[in-house]
Amino acid sequence: MKGASEWDRHAPSSAPNPRHTRYHPRWHRERIPIFWWVGHRRYTLFILRELTAVLVLYSGLLLLAQLVAIGRGPESYQAFQGWLAEPWVLALHTFVLLGLIFHTVTWLNLAPKALVLRVGKIRVPPRAVLVGHYLAWIAVSALVAGALVWVAG
Amino acid sequence: MSPVAKGAGGRQGTEPERVTRSREPLLWSLFSAGGMASALVLPALAGVLWVAVPAGWVAAPEHGAMLAVAAHPLTRAAVSLLLILFFFHWAHRFRYTLYDGLQLYHLNLLIAVATYGIASALSALALWIVWTLG
Image (tube, rainbow over all chains, first blue to last red):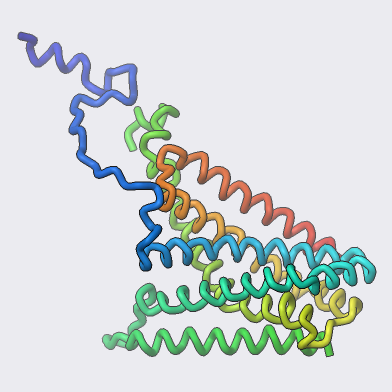
């Protein structure tokens, strides 16, 4: 039978192996299949919502590409606009637009949960926070679309 | 964080949270700001630039007009900010989609370095393109 002092020599602080711990609880954890989110409507929507970030990345890259085309001159810009008008590209971007709207709706719907506003001691009703965010979306959309159409006209 | 863990690189693979915890609030703020910016701006931007104009519903802007807008300092500043926020929004959300969706817990550090690394590189590229344009 070993004494306590002999065990202490192997305590974590003096152990050369940093992974060493004196206790191994061997937690019980259920194995979850990788595609746990397939076949459950809520979970699939959750993963789809998270994947809208890929569309945000794509939009950023597309905007950059368009800026490069604009910077290179009229021919390059026309060629880019021609590519945008190809049926399969237009179809892809319609799908991207739907995904972006899905991102906006899911994002704004979470706003009342994420943002708890108080005026004095009274909490602003969640519905007012929600409506405020949708009004902001309408305002920003009108501004962006209006500016772009104004540039075109 | 104990001194032992801090000094030992081998520990990072087994306890992912320790690696980025201190930077988490900043990264989350970028994710959140990017989520809000993209939610408000992108449907209108994509709807006009990439759907309505190519489909012919809205007149296509002339090159000169687009260049003038793109080269305006306010546009440069706004577009730079938006693009950086979009990229870091993607990085953070995609990182956790891989983490939760595909359960790649053991690759946490690699995924974090890859996603934020790509976002950083794209941000630098975006700044260069936006501010040298025209």
